[in-house]
Length: 181
Image (cartoon, rainbow, N blue to C red; front, side, top):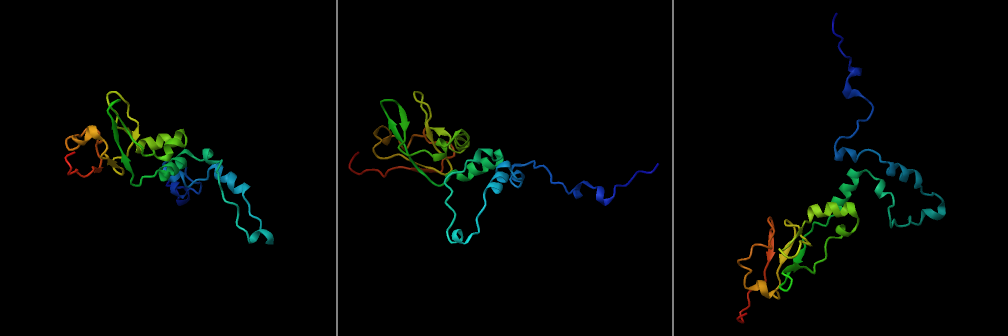
């Protein structure tokens, strides 16, 4: 009995049904329940009185939690402020710990999901034996700044390597004073 050769119409690549996305990038091209809901609930009036005014500004998006997780993660990654920051580091000799007046990235305070993603980009560093790490720092983008008024470290800044995280590209040190200090 001869084998049946599949016709061109029976080949899998000609299937008109859409494929289920297998990667996060492809998942972004499918319609989510939130996108369907928004498209059916948002309509614009074409009456003459409203055509001259612009629609009200969108101040919140309550359907964000209903978006696909892959899309939400893409949004969190785009919202990460990976621009250069100057992170000022102070050493507290009484507690043997580091502190920073530099505000942390805002995504660390948005919600649990954004915090998880932000912590991957900004690990908490500068812990000591007596104090845990609590300063978010991105080694490739942030710049460390040790101000002059960090007296316990001033005389050791050239030899200290502990607080500088691996991969840090920028460290700012105050210029040496010529008045004997």
